[in-house]
Amino acid sequence: MSKFKTIAVFSYPAEAVIIKGKLESEDIDVFLKDEFTVATDPFATNALGGVKMQVYREDFLKAMGLLEQWNPDLLRHRVEYVQCPNCRKRNAREIIDISTARTFTETLSAIYYSLSPLRQRHTFQCKDCNYKFNVDE
Image (cartoon, rainbow, N blue to C red):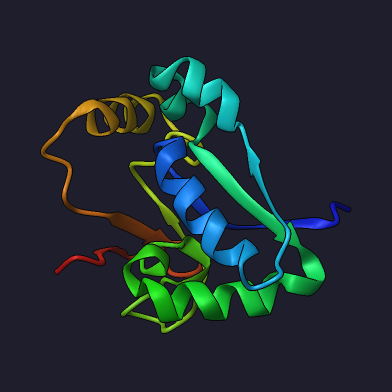
């Protein structure tokens, strides 16, 4: 089991570095997984799932509280916080995320939407009741 926990995912390393500096000013050690890979090849961000901001498990709650205070929109689409409007459980998966695509069609859709500048909606599917919903509506 890992001693780190991911608190946020960013498309660009520059975004992550700003938040990293704020968290480190609060005495929280922050690690950016895949930061240099994405900085070297920005198109790899979709294949890798972005730059993952990680903290020690014992700092997780403090870091999440600070992130929620500073930028609530940053946590709005975190899958573990998305609540299904049908069954009210927090067990969803993002459909257009390439790392959670289950079928070939979902994979192609994920690639299309990750490259499209028009991507505005976050579509989720509940793992319990299979209800599909959008968070942005």
